[in-house]
Length: 127
Image (cartoon, rainbow, N blue to C red; front, side, top):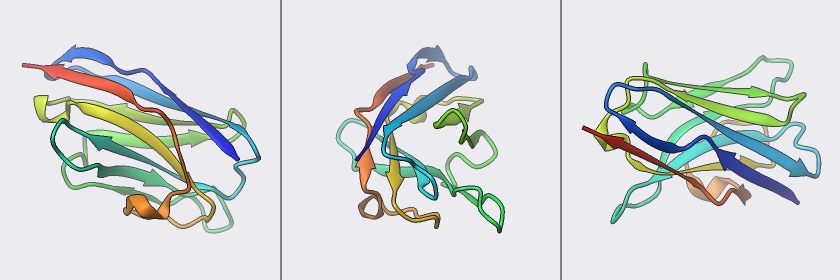
């Protein structure tokens, strides 16, 4: 089992920045790909970004079109922590943000491909 705990959410103004963290504990997360998803009220959970484990082929990342160029995903394997740097935030970024891990090294955009989930952290962007 892998336990995931998100932090860093909050209330900010449009144009501000936030950095979310996701700390893993439990079983080793070596070779696990990680992702961020979000869910706004009344909407389905949607993919935000994902990052692979740093293997022989290097790190792969993927972003939703809506956040590309504004959000940056990264991970520190020594600290078992993944990050989501969110810049130029917009009111439409308001949602509960979840981190997730999957027991394979490939980046995926589908929520069903992930095996472990955190409890979520609220991000609210006010105009």
